[in-house]
Figure (cartoon, rainbow, N blue to C red):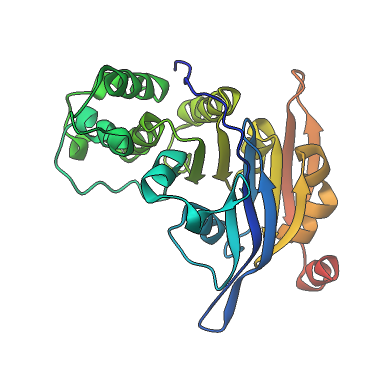
Length: 276
């Protein structure tokens, strides 16, 4: 996969006391976190922790009951919609595509926020080509989208988001349908996006992937922030037990990569003691 071109934006992305309750269930409980451009922040937590909901609130796809989202200190609600579409690229969990079009046409839709009255420009074509190369879908350019596998569609949808050259990439479980080789490629792609200056906030479930790619980790449980910081301070046996209710072993590979092996589920009483 090739590099991703991006000009480093100065704006941070901030969740300010976000709260959301749905049918009496607290989904987000006064979540506050600041995300920085040029960094990959991984959002972790068990099922139902509020990870996807937080990402949707950051992207403006879901309204919180209270709190705000700020971009560069400015409330997202005060930012022009077209400008916001150029700033934030959102990749949902689902890899469903409902249009019977070819791959390159779908990727080109990611340039829509940049389109002027005269249609596509050389810059648009270059951004599309670069995004397709970065996600290894160039060889599928002329294929119909509905002929691709689930993993191929997942990479295609990431390419569509990258084609928009967003200042912020918000991705919800982008590796879920990928084989191990393309999972590693996907992690490398996220790192390159951040290295080019954009901010990346990504929801993952695999603790080892998180340890490999993250500059910062945001650990959630039951809509609460359990920890927020660098991987070495968040991915500890104690915090993993507190958050997931499992015991784990943490080690380092010969090349210096940290790895986490969950080894046993804690009893209910032990897990409750950890949470308390």
